[in-house]
Amino acid sequence: MEVERVQAIASRSNNLGIIPPEFIRSEHEQPGITTFNGPVPELPVIDLANPDQNQLTREMVEASSEWGIFQLVNHGIPEEVVKEMQRVGKEFFELAPQDEKEKIAKKPGMKEGYGTKLHREPEGKKTWVDFLYHNIWPQQILDYSVWPQSPPEYRKAHEEYSKYLVPLVHRLFEHLSIGLGLEKNVLKEASGGENQKFLLKINYYPPCPRPDLALGVAAHSDMSTLTLLVPNEVQGLQVLQDNHWVDAKYIPNAIIVHIGDQFEILSNGKYKSVWHRSTVNKDQTRMSWPVFCEPPEDLVIGPLPQLVSNENPAKYKTKKFKDYEYCKLNKIPQ
Ligand code: OGA
Ligand code: NI
Image 1: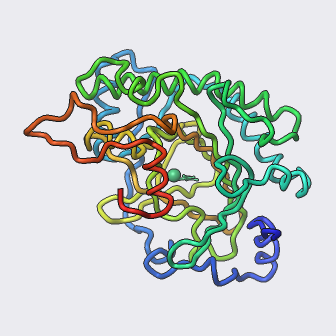
Image 2: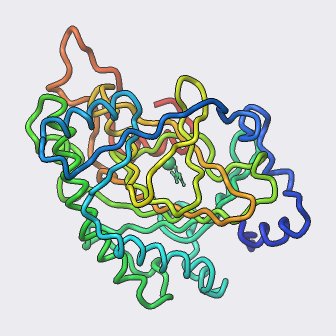
Image 3: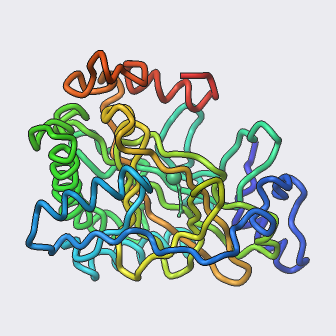
């Protein structure tokens, strides 16, 4: 069956000024009703150029424990490298002919490919987004058959981005290991070492005539160890804080780091995976590029033994990453 993409639904809806009923969230989710209106602090800022490494670690630990999300500045990824990745992704969504996109459509059971969320959520609602998933690292697992063929610079742009992103992630892992009172390489090794996967997702949220009623991505926490996200210039990320959905305010060119479920588990709850969702915009297309750092599927993840004792027992089960994923995707208790 041919799937209708949100991009096509959006073109139609924008002319009519209304959205199909399956995109209207229930009242307890509608951003128009549930977005916090009061003053909101900016996401914690971590300056990677800070020469005081101990202070940097302390700030990162505090943000990871209290917010589960922070923004990185002076992260070392050149602006033109990010801009080029954004350009080629936008061109794929906006200029590639639809049949070319469908050639790399995600097949059921596969993680990679172009798509639209097919299965409806428990309440029968859909989200206002099309996406593309593919791994960008390590090189030996890359499947170029699910990468866009156009624009021609697509592949090069992502090779460039991963060249900077991978060492940056490893640097964050070191700070977060030290922050747990452990050797700097512990979190990296526990997450699969050089075999950890870097899964890129491109979110494409077309303009939506009723951004007060729809959501781009519904509330969730990421399954990753860490997620590093670059947004375009259109705001829309929200995080749950003290039971309120607050707009995540970030600086242009910052990279947004989310603590994912696997780091919450490995740290035995010291680091908190952040609940977040995304809203859509009436007139502008929002895009974002999260990279999910994920352990190899057969790797067993649980609270690090060094952090567990009689006084501080394990708060999470130990299981293979693929079993964690299976439960989460099928909404089975972990
Ligand atoms: C996601 C996500 C948020 C955003 O795709 O997991 O949380 O800002 N996206 O697009
Ligand atoms: Ni997410």
